Every structure is written in C-alpha cells, then in structure tokens.
Image 1 (cartoon, rainbow, N blue to C red):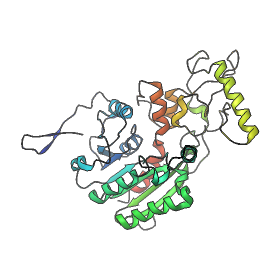
Image 2 (cartoon, one colour):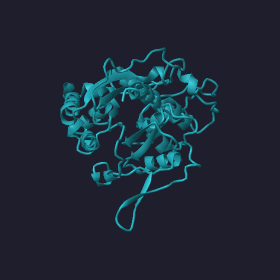
Image 3 (cartoon, helix red, strand yellow):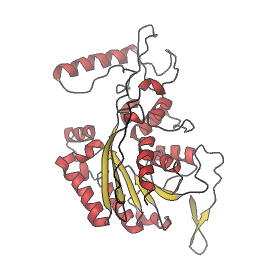
Image 4 (tube, rainbow, N blue to C red):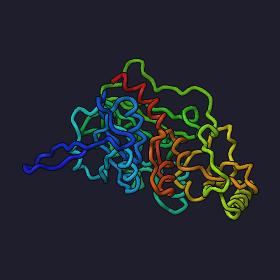
Length: 346
C-alpha cells in the first residue's frame, strides 16, 4: 500500500502494479494485518497464505527493506518509534503481527552484552524497549488479535521478570487476554529453532481455545539441500576448516564456547543465526566426495527453506545480507500454524 498527500493535505491511496512481484497481496482478503519489525516478511507470507492482506509494514533496516520491496512490491515504513506515520493505518484492523527484536533476550545476546558491559532485556535502549511501542500501537488501533514472536529464552530472561512485565502490560494496559507457548519448529522445518509465540485477543480468549500443539517427527536436514558441487564458493577453505577444528577442540577441553562440526543430515539443523555468513560454523554440510572432505556452508536458498520461505521468494542479492536476513527471520510455517488456529475465533 502506498499513499500520497493531496493538495488539500488529505491522504489518498495510490494503486500499485503488483503483477511482476513474486508474492503480491491477496486480491480478496479475509482479514487485514500489519507487519511490525517486518524484516523480510515472514509474518506477511504466513498471513497472506491464510487469506490476509497486509495494510501496513514497518522495518528500519535498509537491506531488509530492499528484499521486502523485491518480493512484495512495497517499501516498509521506517522507525517504529516515530508514530506520526501510523495515521495511515486502516480502521478496523484485525491482526497486529511482529517479532520484536530478540537479541536483548536471547542467551547468546545476553552473554555477549554482559561480556561487553552492555545492558540487555528492557534495559537495552535501542532494541529492548521496542515492545512498548507495540503496546502503544495496539492501544491506539485496537486490533482484534496480536500475534508476537521472540526467542524461547524470553520466558526465562531476568528470572522471569521480563515475561511477567510483558504479560502484565498486555493484560492490564491493553485489556487483552494473554496466551503463549514455546515451540521447537523442527516438525515444521528441518531446524531446531525454539520460539515463544504470544497470542492476545482483544475480546477475550474464545471459550475452550488453547495454543495449538505441534506433532510429528523432526524433519531431516537433507530434505532441503540443493545439489551443490564440491568446488562451489560455499566450500570452506582448508585454513578455515582447520581453524574450526582447533577452536572446537579448545572449547571442548575448557567446557565452554561454540563448536563446529559437520551435521547429521538425517536430523534437523541447529538454529540458523544472523552471524552465519561469517564462517558457517553453526551448520556445516558434509561433502564426502570432496578430495579433502571439506564441508560447505548452506546456500541462501537452503537457508530460505530452513525458515519455510517459498521457492519463489527472492533473497537479497548480497549473500552476506541474505544470510543475515534469514537468520533473523521468523519460521513461516510456525506463524501459519498458530495463526490458522486463532483466526477462526476472531
């Protein structure tokens, strides 16, 4: 959706040609949604697949904006803390969706900030406070449902205080009912990715409704792999692989730190992270046919599949940015799974 100001200062709507974008909006939507902290649109795809139309999106980072525009034909608005642009929001909003920044609450993020003497959680001024901007938007526009995502560690951060504040603010400040569950997405995508999903209803949780439970067996990593030649740019150099081995041995000996090993392709991968572009140590693919058995990194397309993005989705042209963006993304099938169970009750 794009807007312009008329001569009289009123806001009018411009029509956009979506015919040449991979993931155009739904022609006859069943509900409306807004996409906050949009990233590359994981929430948007999931809700579009359920018949929703995104009427507003917000993302401050320039590179994800480029990817968002390439795939949806729209450029998200910028800084969410500048609320003046929210006058553009439609009335009668159905769903507010967003994965507010997880780094201040994740185990790795907390450890890194503590090591550097930096604040984490709500005390992180740049990212930790953005949850409260969601509350202000919801307070003003009263969507029928909120669906929010963060790391599984959110419920344990600061001995549970952070999560208690989130619940209290949603229930008392907004007056919404509060529901949550922690999911490992490995039955939906071949990745061990643990996420906390919050669903809040404006008019109270429907009678008998509960957060849905995942079922099934974990999916194998081999199910999303491409046929990549051994001499591809994704193969590690001898120096890099030797460095991984030495670092892993040191960390095992001292009982702490990250390790880097090739993955068992019959099991899900470990969690895809934004730093993956640096050396790929979180998920290395064995190449037994390589002359020196050097492993390789995942390709951007494989990362897209790990997060459940459709094949027509176009990653950022820069591999570094593509890896970062998929590492920060929400698993599309998880959002669809939870939202599908909730939408029928609003």
